[in-house]
Image (cartoon, rainbow, N blue to C red):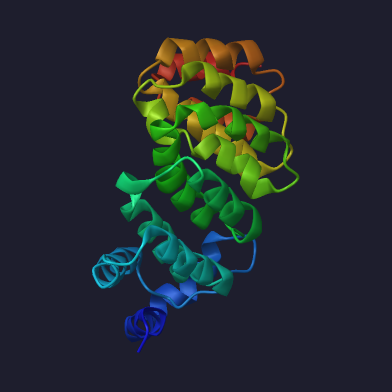
Length: 234
């Protein structure tokens, strides 16, 4: 039995009916799910990856693409996990593979965030010269690509990295009409506020007349009460 069949058999064995029944509640768009809890998907990802550790990176990426093509949420999570497990072997051309997955297969916020937070975010931290490519994503007609431009930098933002690029991406997305994109760049600002509270607060105050309230609320979520109050003043 090949690895994908083994993987799918394992996912089927771990279906939880309550998880399956409630899954759709978290998404506006229709999603296909097995109904397996996220922690169990992670464990299955790790166990199945141990079976392919001697497989070349390019072959693993081909398997990831097959999982993305299925359109099933848990299979996309496995693909995200497998690609992240190979982070020590990333090469510059891998960006275009990850970008292709995002553009062609991602169809919900959970897959977007899992892929971009970890796989793409780690890639960018390793190859920061691709930040300019990330900025181009803000012009995409695809909502997940635009959200991806922001959420890719969540982990670096918490560490205070790429400050200039973070604010440039937020500038580009500032008046985006899609609420999931607004939440994406609002989350990015919230993450940045953990290490650069004053900068983020000043940014919010400067732009709050244009910034959608959804993005603003996300951005100030972790700030002190008095700063939140100032930011929310009309």
